[in-house]
Image: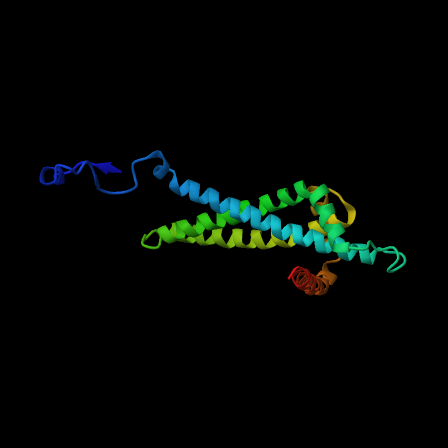
Length: 203
């Protein structure tokens, strides 16, 4: 914001003086909202990128696992084929799953922002409720990440939409709850090896 001041009396050539910046325009009134929107878009795009990588790896592993005669029935470039299928047929499912996770993550950021604002306050009830909300949304984020990853595997294997894949993945996990703890760690390790393979092939 620019305005004139008493300096014009001392220096007639001066037309304006920079007094201060911010706080008057409509942009500055909604600056925090715009920053949260930018943060939301960042979370959404980051989660979509992670989901695309998970579906690509799951599809490549599935093409090997379900091949009747190995390696004759396998596609020549399983990673590229799985990546192209994910972009062509499953972009909406990946975007929807990433959207749900991004909303929860933005809510967590808002709760952290409120917690930072309430540090100087003496309202113990508000702090207690805020801590409970932070704990609940932390658990919700972990659960959605776990469910999304298994839903993406269902998407890559069966080609169903996100909601159907998430439902099938949830009931499959509930029917095999004991095996999940062991197989989940094995899956994490396989995903890690796949990421190393992709990075090594690109680099």
